[in-house]
Length: 310
Length: 310
Image 1 (cartoon, rainbow over the protein chains, first blue to last red):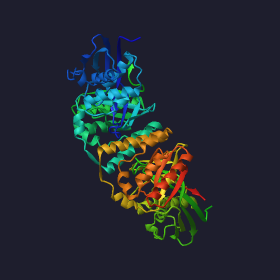
Image 2: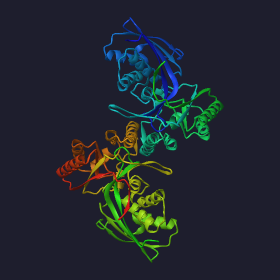
Image 3: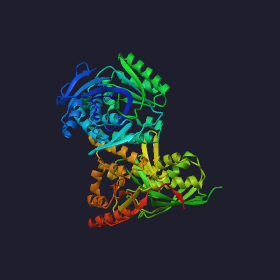
Image 4: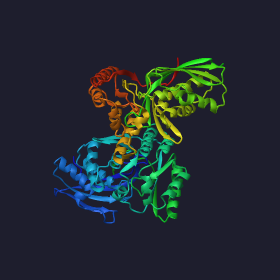
């Protein structure tokens, strides 16, 4: 029996994870988007409402990451159904927490359940990627995949997309500060170099190896030593007022590592217990405040399961 | 009680492992060097003989990787003993199989046992690195560490040296062909670019992550998909006549991956059983022969334990 309507919530995600620029990400237990999808008789996809975006996101299905991802499914499977989509951006966009990816994942996850399509995660991933492409102008899976799969994700490669899903150590805690400024992914990309010194690249891939090893052997100290970014963070930090002080505050409060979430402005820090994670959050918020930034702080374990029906 | 003399054998090693340029390596069950160290009354280190080097390696302790590594221990610990060292290069140098690293490791391992110094592997590593520096003009641990530790090694970083030792999957087999030409590490370094495109670097660190994940989850297919080199192989392949054909022969015979061992000319291939590993060896040797190369072929599991007293 087909459902007539479904409401789903999808998690925010942290991509790059310091060293893993464009290849790594993880989901957190923070709701990024909620969407409601209803069956209609109109044989078209309609985005009837978007909340929490200050009117900035397009209602045009082709230009909206959620709409586009859903349309990809219907077109590909030749499904002649009408859908009404309502999107609630809980975190808002331009946060560095995978907002556009979350909308795309929410769309494909909801439609798969609503129409009982029984598509695999791998199939859903490909549709969601086509939706996310609308926002990022390129195929990037480092938010889409963790949002859909939960846990940590390594995108080993793109030809074809090769997803390695890794459970997080149980005692890994994440503190996230979301300064209330907006950074556009496309602009954060423009400031990156086209070429990097081989020496820095070697440092970076040593750290990626260390991060994967730390995750798979539950070695939080190793994860901490590995989460460094020689490539994006030095350039993108300049887009976040007070980044250095916020990072220092996190590390001085017990964080094993701290870096920019995706293209920012959100910043994440890892620690090995909940109490420390909370202390880190206060310290980061305080440092941000000194630098004139209003911010929201979240403390979370790594999300283990991805989207859910609510 | 101190021994008067000791003889040790140390394994050859494969560095880079495709994607892990300068940060990864593994040891193989092939003896690279045998050395004998004897206590003497002369209060000096003397290298009295080197076999298998065609007279090309220096007997001067300061210029010899083994002599230098041993001298570092004696100087550092203020040990006033005389030592006579005989070195047998079983594989020979300039092979890409970690020959200079092997001599350095052999020296520190032998002296540690001979003088009952009880130095840790980490301490031995640092002395061996100073020996290996004589040959490679820089601190590189990607042969020294696997030769000393056995198994796979990730050098997460160098400040300080951070070694992650990883057991190999039981069903991982390695075929090595050693074309009988010499490539100097220093020259194979010169042809590398100082800068690389960010896009290639991202591909490379995705693969490093995949390789580590494959090793830790015993996923030979994932190891195979990950062992690709966007950086060194495309340039260094030109130094090995017929490299493309030899690689093709390996992959067509059942290898899950094939790349240059270190700076070459040795080439390694991975497979998941002994029979296939042997077939791959014959195919590679045949392809090398067609290209006018005499070669030696080895089939081996990953060496699990490093140097041993013989």
